[in-house]
Image (cartoon, rainbow, N blue to C red; front, side, top):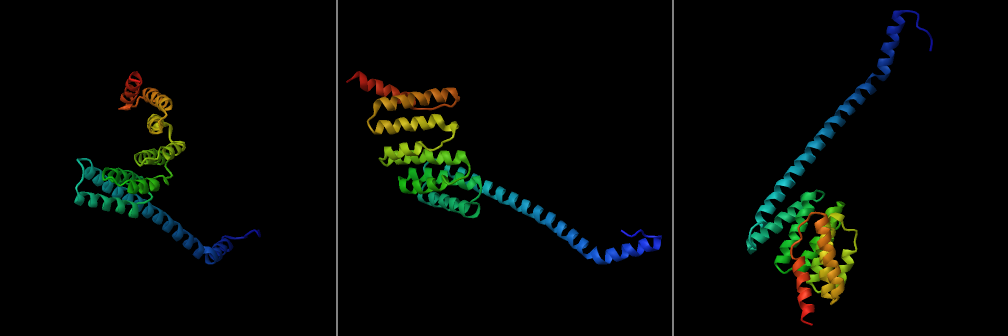
Length: 218
């Protein structure tokens, strides 16, 4: 760089540099400010969406927490599920709403509707939700008389937190196939896992007791 020989020359150089580069600096500052504003606006929007989804899901839970729904209540619940999945489909609340929708469908004897809702929930990127969907799909297949398909679903990579429940349903599937030894092993495993994980698992001991009673009469 040529050495500047006086303050006037330095001042002239600054003026020339500003004339050539000042607008780009201002534009960059404006864009940076706009980026910060846009990011904050997006964050606020996302938070607002999450809060709206949470409130809607809580309304759905409250509506379905009581006794069996009548037709009008069921229609309202289904409308809430559709609203959550349509408007907040990328949230946890939408996926939980699908699980709840499947339960409502089972209560109504609509196994195909339950299957559709659970298959959608099984597409979740959240492993626990995905695992719950597979587990409940296996129960639906059992209720529909398909123990082999239920066992195939139970071979999915279900979360370890649901291992006791998986063993329980596996026992139900083996029992449906008439494989009593495998059913007993699965139910005993379910009880052991439930104790290890400190998770109450109701009904399994009754199944084992029933097996023992059946064997005693044979």
